[in-house]
Image (tube, rainbow, N blue to C red; front, side, top):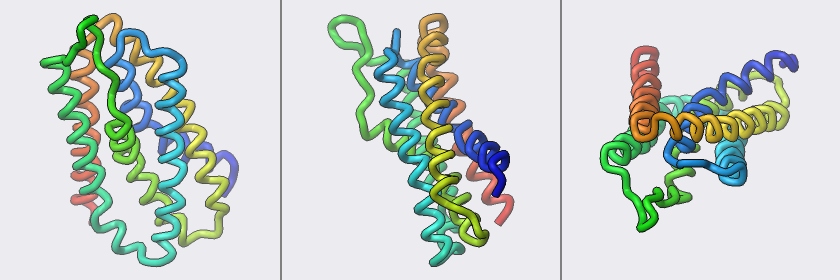
Length: 188
């Protein structure tokens, strides 16, 4: 696999994480660089591991993973997106009027939901002679950078559009899950 092909693959695998990270940033008044980096690290680490897992599964039993991967992505993304919409409609605030921090589990669930496609790609890469470590590292690094930028950009959007932007982000995330499900059900 050429470096250009690896780069294109890495960026394409990172787009849905970028969208989800926008939603993470929108939910905060001014997400700091530290929060953005932590979010980017979580998204990048999970996105780096899932192609490896997919590759391992692909070498063992590719047909079984492809049967249900879209259902997992759908459930996670619709669940997290629905939660974002509910919070936009009725935002929880603490005594200072600030939103409480998202739980680590919600962040991990979102990151995993956006990385299911990378696992499927890992399954398909198992049938080619490629260096899966290089590909996984490229995907993880691109996702980390794009997710960090997404949180920061989401914070700027959130300052201007607040709850509306979070609601739209939640709808987009749920729509992404639905799109994954429809695409996979339409192409068995």
